[in-house]
Image (cartoon, rainbow, N blue to C red; front, top):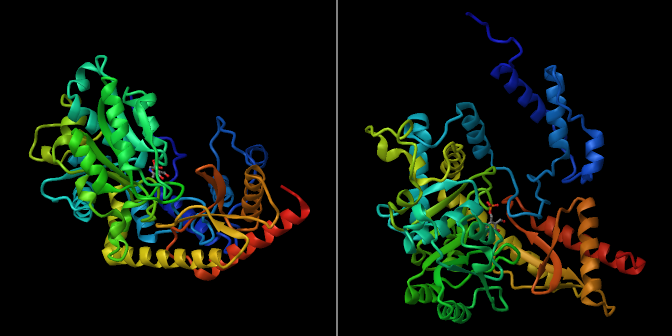
Amino acid sequence: MSSTPPSNAMSLDTSLALLNEIVEQLPQDRPVSQAPSARELEKVLDLRLSNEGASTEQLKEAAQAYLNYNPDVSQTNFFKLLYSGLNAPAVLGDWVTSISNATMHTYQVGPVATLMELELIRQWNALVGYDPDKSDGVMVSGGSQANLIGMLLARHKIAPEAKTKGLQGKTLVAYVSDQAHYSGLKAANVLGIGSDNLIAVKSDAQGRMDPVELDAQIAKSLQLGHTPFFIGLTAGTTVVGAYDPVKACSDVAKKHNIWLHIDGAWGAPVLFSQQHKHLLADAHLADSVAWDAHKLMNVPITAAVILVKEAGLLKDTCSGGGGEYLFHADENADFNLGERSIQCGRRADALKVWMSWKAIGNQGFSDKIDHLFACKAHCLEGIESNPNLTLLAPAVYLNVLFRYQSDENLTEEQLRSLNIAISKEMKAAGHYIDYAQYKGQTGIRLILANGLCKTTEIDAMLAKCNSVGAQLVADRAF
Ligand SMILES: Cc1ncc(COP(=O)(O)O)c(C=O)c1O
C-alpha cells in the first residue's frame, strides 16, 4: 500500500526565515522582566492545542509571545541567577546541534560531537590539574546530574556490588557543607542512600566547610557502624560563593578512605583566571569535579560535565545493557560515550561549548572573569560607602549578598520583609535581583555573570536600592 507524506510539514527554510524575522523584530528596549503571574499569563496566551494545525503566522506570534514574557536573561541588569548574558558562538552551536539532531550514545550517530566532547574533557581536566591521559569524564544535563554521578562513583568505589545487588542493608553516609546545593539531597534520594544519610557539616563564618567538624561527623558515623563514602565540597556556593578548603578536607578524605568530590557547577570556571584561580587551589586532589558551562561560561542551558580523575571508572559504574542493539563492538567502540553515561539519548551539548571556547579561547574566559571580579570589587566599594547598605557575607567570588538597613531599629523579621519588598520593586523597575537567606539573615543576592556588566549599571542598581529602601521605610510599606 502506498502513502504520501502529509503536506502540512514546515520546511527548514520557512523555519529559518521565521527565526530571522523574530530576532530582527525583538524590541530593543524590552524590559528585563514583565513579571506576570501564572494566572494572568494564562489569560493572555492562547495555549490550547487542537485537532487542526496552525498557520506559520500563529507560530510566529506564539514564539514572539514566548520571548516577550520570558525574562530577558541576556541583559546586563539581570543579576538574579548564576547565568546571564548571551554567548553568540554558543547559540550558533546550539542551532546547528538542533539541525543535526545528533545523539551522544554512540560515535556512529554523533561523530564530530563525540570528538569535540572528548577534546573538551581533556581541556577541562587539564584546568582542574588532572592528567588528561589518565582521567576522563562525560557531559551531563547539569550540575545536579554531575553531583549525582559523583555520588554514584563514590558508591561504586566503596560498594561495587550495589550496582547489581543493591545496598543490602548497608548504611552509606555522605557529607556536604550546610551551604551546599540541594542537588546533594536529590542524589542521596535517587541512589537509595537516603537523604537522612546526607550530613550537612557546619560551615564557618565565611560559609566554608569546617574540616574539623567534617572529621567529627565522620567519627560519629563510624561509631554508629555506618559507612562514610562521599565528601562533596562546593567551589562557589549558591548563595554566597564560598569555596570549601580542598587540601584540609582532602586530608580527612584520605585518612578515612572516602571519595572526594567538588561541586564546581558555579565556581570551577575560576580556574581559567590566572589572577583568581587560587580560590580553587588543589582541585586535582578531588576524585571528581562537577562543572557547568551553562553558568559562568554563558553557554545556553544545558551544558555541564562530570570530570573523573581515574579513567575507566565512569564506564565501570554506568555501563550495562544496550549491547544487543546499540553498542556494537566495532572499530569505534572506544568512542561510544553512552557507556559512561546514565542517559541513552543525550543532546550533543559539546558543540555549543566547543564553538564558544574556540571563538574566545582560554584567555577570553579569563578576561571575562577578571572583568567580573573588578565589577564585584566596585560593587563592594559602593556598599561599603553607603551607610544604609550592609554586606551579609564575605564576597570572595561573584556573589554579593547585602541588605538595606535603615536607621530605625528593625527586627530581623522586619528587615527580611523590607529586603523582600525592595527586591520585588527593583525587579519591576528593571533591576532583576532576588533575595536569599544566609545564616539566619535575609538580604539581596546579586550575581555577576554577564561579561558585558558595566560599573555604571551597578551604581544605578545600588542607588535604586537605596531610594526604594528609603521610600518603603518612610511609607512603612513592608
Ligand atoms: C553550587 C551549585 N551546584 C549545583 C547546582 C545545580 O546545577 P544545575 O542547575 O546545572 O543542575 C547549582 C545551581 O544553581 C549550584 O549553585
